[in-house]
Image 1: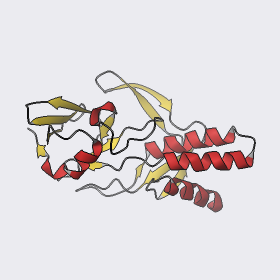
Image 2 (image 1 turned 90 degrees about the vertical axis):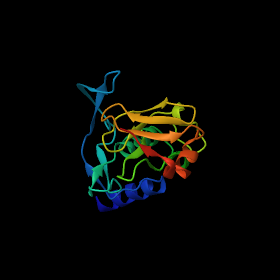
Image 3 (image 1 turned 45 degrees about the horizontal axis):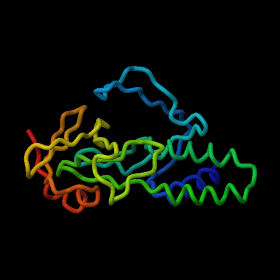
Image 4 (image 1 turned 60 degrees about the vertical axis):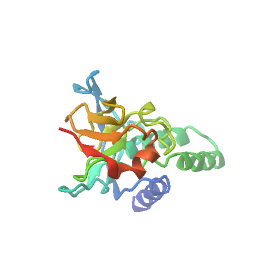
Amino acid sequence: MAERDAAILGVLRAAGFEICRVEVNLLHGYYRDQDGSSTGETYPINPDCPLAVVSNNWISFDLQGERRDYQATIWLNDVVRTVAALNDDEVAAVKLAQLVAEAVPMVPIRLTWFGDMMVEQPSLDPHIREDEMIWKRSVVHGRCMGRLELHQVSDEWRSISCRKCRLRVYVPSNLNTFGELRKNAHLTKMGD
């Protein structure tokens, strides 16, 4: 058991996930309405690999602790399903190396001094890259997991607003990629 966990942690860390442990746990996600609110219906996140990844990188200004990392858990489930379907150990090892190389997720972008972060929405799509246009991909507010949207508010400013908790942050209109937003996050302003 300890060897298995050490091997899994090694693969997850090589893929860029900052994790502290795995636990046996079948996680569920919630189906969402168009406004982002939960419908109350659930679906299994990790049916092929009932191991949940626990991360300790969810530390904000006023809260420290561990949190289940749904993105890493979804990725691990997908990897286990993909590699288990292969019959050849050498082919499986090559495929695992390829999946690990493609797996490095977007590093969360700090939006406010209070620790509000823009994070990649858990998905099986390829991860967000720094040179991608900001709103061609779905991102969420790290504190409440509400979907973040971009709105043009003037010629010089756009707002990033959370559909769930209504956080609003203003950013200069000339920031178009995730990398530009990360480098210039100090230019953001809190909304009302």
